[in-house]
Length: 527
Ligand SMILES: *[C@@H]1O[C@H](CO)[C@@H](O)[C@H](O)[C@H]1NC(C)=O
Ligand SMILES: *[C@@H]1O[C@H](CO)[C@@H](O)[C@H](O)[C@H]1NC(C)=O
Ligand SMILES: *[C@@H]1O[C@H](CO)[C@@H](O)[C@H](O)[C@H]1NC(C)=O
Ligand SMILES: *[C@@H]1O[C@H](CO)[C@@H](O)[C@H](O)[C@H]1NC(C)=O
Ligand SMILES: *[C@@H]1O[C@H](CO)[C@@H](O)[C@H](O)[C@H]1NC(C)=O
Ligand SMILES: *[C@@H]1O[C@H](CO)[C@@H](O)[C@H](O)[C@H]1NC(C)=O
Ligand SMILES: *[C@@H]1O[C@H](CO)[C@@H](O)[C@H](O)[C@H]1NC(C)=O
Ligand SMILES: *[C@@H]1O[C@H](CO)[C@@H](O)[C@H](O)[C@H]1NC(C)=O
Ligand SMILES: *[C@@H]1O[C@H](CO)[C@@H](O)[C@H](O)[C@H]1NC(C)=O
Image (cartoon, rainbow, N blue to C red):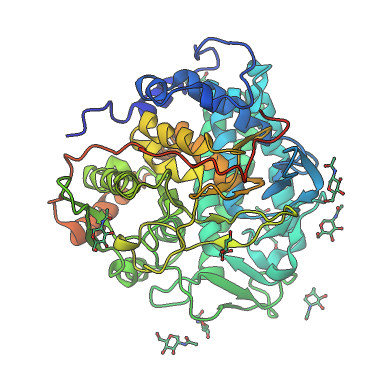
């Protein structure tokens, strides 16, 4: 068996939850922007507390007005381009848009901030940690106002969010999302808000519990609209719904909903978060709810990752690309309460880390923005990055790695996950005034001079243990926890039985760094 301390990060976070007054690692001087190379791999592996403290401090600098979010409306910005030489952000490089998935990361951090986590305080308000719950409350209040206003202006969305322009006080759909709405991102958002409601309710302050009721009303509204907007009959859920007219009310005579194209949301990965919302809360009858699982059952597939070495084989759930992004659902719902699922997802990290180790790759893979060119523009988005040998879609582009690929590893072993994060971030230009940089080429020939929620805050959320503790407690109060455990256990048992190969394999560690080719140098503002 893996003899490292398992689930340390989860336990540690639980102990911090009631903890406005809790002891974090001792306050030290402001860490250096370029702190990562100051630590050795052994430092991080033996005790990552100090490293985490520095990481949270700098990633938190992304959370500032006109970089990661908009103070005027409490909404996220997708991210911002950095000057390739200086590393500073500049308003003309801001992505003025965002989506429900980025909102989910923001809300997860805010939930922990409300709950008194000293880690969330280090991220949000390191100079004045005691104000953190208040700061989070104010952002959540503003955010809810923006959501409610959006629902009034665009009632056709049924309360859900499309990709939206976030640079004005009132948000509106981006041009390419007029009359369209995605299920996957909204599923991520719903469970994050569910966790935040629990944190607000628990605080016992009347203002906070009032705000909990406001958010609960928003959640409750989506329970009444989810079927109409996304359910397509016979177990099919639209991946993207085409709305007749976003300005017309749902249920009105001039409104309609259809799946766009043939794409249905039947993935057993992060898209499943939306399936659970329909299953646990919608008005569908029992037979129709069961169909939601039958149509996606064939996609839950057990497969073997072959090391082709003495490490042997490791049984994993077949990935789409096996991008780390696919594990997002572990940040939100308490899947790992089911022992079999915990074992399967732990195995996934054995395969992920050892695949990079055995192939001499200095980091791991996840869907991410490509590198930027000389003029500082992003070359494209690389969706198809993961582990080809254990994926449905094995045609992949494997020239770019990203720090956030470690987030699912962090959920199982914080030190090993952060050792990989350090190994990637030690690459030239991979730290900046807002924390880690988006991505880098494995051959050291380029980086993506960009910062974003996806590539940064997934790791922060994993360090916080996701919101699964909050979500579990509320699910118990809502009387849906046992059903969740039973159904998820049933679906994974059908595909896996009980026998998994490779549970004695240790998570692997990096054995090569990103080469210094001289083509990339550290940012002037972060050396
Ligand atoms: C901001 O970006 C614009 C356009 O890319 C550029 O002209 C300007 O020099 C940049 N400003 C700073 C302070 O980097
Ligand atoms: C927000 O972004 C959109 C799209 O880039 C642009 O048309 C609009 O002028 C921007 N608004 C503000 C206030 O900057
Ligand atoms: C809120 O009140 C409950 C019941 O009185 C108590 O158990 C809990 O510790 C309180 N929570 C906080 C954060 O003060
Ligand atoms: C959303 O708008 C509809 C009217 O179209 C309203 O009935 C509903 O209460 C609103 N939901 C929220 C959460 O504000
Ligand atoms: C399902 O979506 C298709 C388009 O993909 C549409 O033609 C059909 O009307 C929809 N059916 C229901 C019941 O929503
Ligand atoms: C959509 O609905 C709004 C509000 O009823 C209306 O003003 C607009 O003309 C409609 N758009 C189209 C294309 O029918
Ligand atoms: C949509 O799916 C159906 C059933 O799987 C198939 O027969 C049809 O060809 C598909 N249409 C398109 C446009 O891909
Ligand atoms: C083991 O060999 C198979 C078949 O050639 C290949 O697909 C897989 O990537 C190899 N495993 C590793 C860890 O390289
Ligand atoms: C990423 O950039 C490389 C050049 O560095 C290019 O060869 C590749 O096609 C790009 N891929 C995407 C999806 O943008």
